[in-house]
Length: 278
Length: 278
DNA sequence: TATACTAATGACTAACGGGTCATCTGTCAA
DNA sequence: TTGACAGATGACCCGTTAGTCATTAGTATA
Picture 1 (spheres, rainbow over the protein chains, first blue to last red):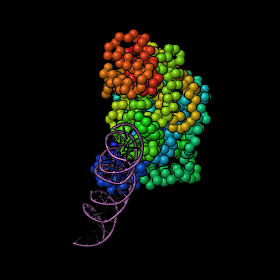
Picture 2: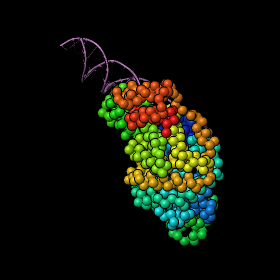
Picture 3: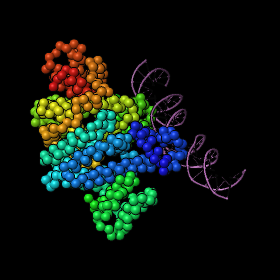
Picture 4: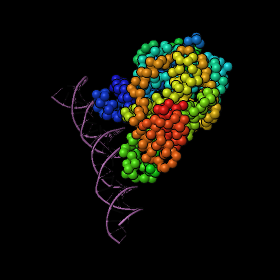
């Protein structure tokens, strides 16, 4: 509802400025112009608010970038579109990007770490698939290093405009990083990150959303939105999940119908992976 | 004195685990086996403790790496030694490295930001001088990008072993990053970070230690250490600062005398820059 | 032993944190 | 006008925090 949105927006501003822990509920409610009690009508606790924010934006980021990678047919454009989309999202949602970088590794809550790792690995998978597609078997040995460098570029270069308020030339930044990525991928020969290392890193969890989990989110989404093409698409996708009858082309079309709907981005991402749709 | 050292060491462990804000004085004193009052005999406040820790380690890191870069004559070894030294320091002082990365951008205190920026820029200067020396004028346009990528590698790759407890092959890591750096420096043509951008980033402050500031630290150091070659060297260097009479060779020798003394690393770094000693 | 002085203690304060709940307000149907 | 009820309020609870200070323990000197 309205209130929840307001609180999330206003809290985000404060979190970006001072971090989670240094921002009190008092300050949030004052910034919203509501009472303390009203806050607890929308969220059960401060942690729930934080988790809601993380989920909201990370689902957005992850599904957006996954779509860009999977839908771009031309390999020539792929890297450019990838970087452009990433930094454009960071720029548009600068407040969240800031807290993402600021709070990245903080371990004050088990659940936060788990959430963080899940999205981190989703991003790893997306980047790795892109790297494999672009450079093929030739870089089998060094692909994880390339993936890791791409992540490094993302984080390092985003700090430049997030924390120093420097003017951002998105086009130049993307082109510059495309070149750097290509140069690295085509010339490096000494891998540091081996497959074993990656597996060790991932050992704590390998959350693959199950059919039931997707179904649950799907039903929740259906309840939330009003009668529309999107709602119909969701219902059809739900039936397809329970009992597959439709052709891949139809499924892909249905997914396209819901892709841009802000509430359905995440379920669209999950379904794309579940149905193995490019 | 003894107590101060104990508190710093024990606090570091807790900070690395839970962060500054989530660690209370109570917990620190319990972990030290001392009373709360005893803490305040050594430090005026929690902030003073944090600043002392930052200064202690950042001076160490910065002066160590500066010395390595300036004292390595063979260009072939330079990058390798650079990366090796950095990651070795991070590995040896993992607790501090963790809080450095965790708390990097947190802005709960103006003074911390300033401190952070000063050391950040000192590191920028060191890396840039190394890049200029290794690759010369050919990369005039892209040198800042190369410098920034080196910093990115440092941060990104250190997370791998700091937060995932993965086994670390220092030699392989250094070799792997040397290759990556060389590849980037020799092939990239599209600069993103221009000189103007760097200047904009640095505008808030360009702390160049003045003669008086160095003198002050020098006197403090002289008071702190006992009669020894190091103390004599410091006194001679102080005289040289007030009234230059000694030859560069002698100054260099004196600096070498104090370089390894843990209390003098920072003043040695400042003097090396002041006297323009390679 | 008496004195003087420093090092150390921990009960205490004041402030602030997240979270609760009795109370109030505004609206709408009867 | 009355009653019912969802939405909103903020005083209040209780735990925790940084920081203080009167008191005590320990030790060196006379």
